[in-house]
Image 1 (tube, helix red, strand yellow):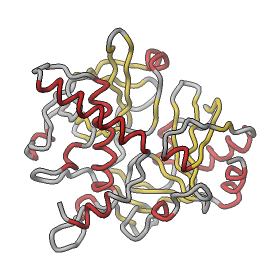
Image 2 (cartoon, one colour; image 1 turned 90 degrees about the horizontal axis):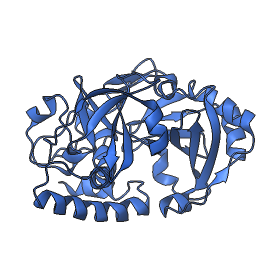
Image 3 (spheres, helix red, strand yellow; image 1 turned 90 degrees about the vertical axis):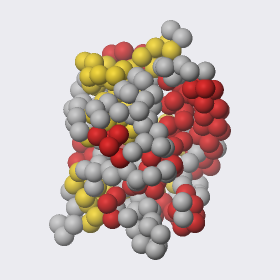
Image 4 (cartoon, one colour; image 1 turned 45 degrees about the vertical axis):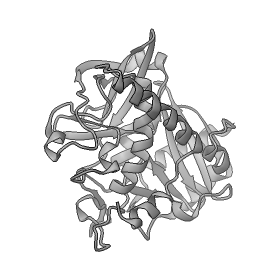
Length: 317
């Protein structure tokens, strides 16, 4: 791995809690694998994949996979088109041993679905779990060859049952669902690569947020970064709903080495995490920056909102 990639990884916006949980999860998952278990703990695998996703997708999606001569690897680079759209190429995972090979992903219907920042609790998962689509194969690791990613239900998460999600298209979102020690466990995976984003509607519209918001809260950068659960509610629902509607009209920009506002906004004055609770129990987590920029998940694009609408939601934060 080049020194340039290592330098960029050091700039990743990862909450400290994720780092600590990941260390525990990696140790637990390795122990289970060494014990020869065929079906790994979903909790352990989820923790491991969470860390690897944060590291791996930063390299894959954010224009920071560098070749030995210092140029970028164009196969995964988001591209701004002449029509002001952003093209997110289909994921082409690197060849050979690489930590980026181990992002949390599932191959389904010829597409790669990765973990997301939309969450749901177990009880709500019972309500929206759809038809069973199949069972993942824990066939992808850092030693896998490129052809391993062409196999249906190949994954980096071990063995888990995969389902559709009621109310959402299978071409966008699927979920793993099962029980661990008698308790339900669920996690979303989304396909946000191999697409062209003309406006926020191509991403936020898929989340089915308009007319579906029940509440929202936020926290500052330091609380988010240190995993302090110091959440503050959004009081004005009209401003919140206006903001959600305006998300569909936002303009996309590709995340690049020299064009990523979040790089200089990791402070309490400019950074907020906004969690929007929907009526179906899903929680959509967005990162908002003071100048009107919005981030969702780990994809290679960010969005800019109309200043008038954004200033109103920012006043609530």
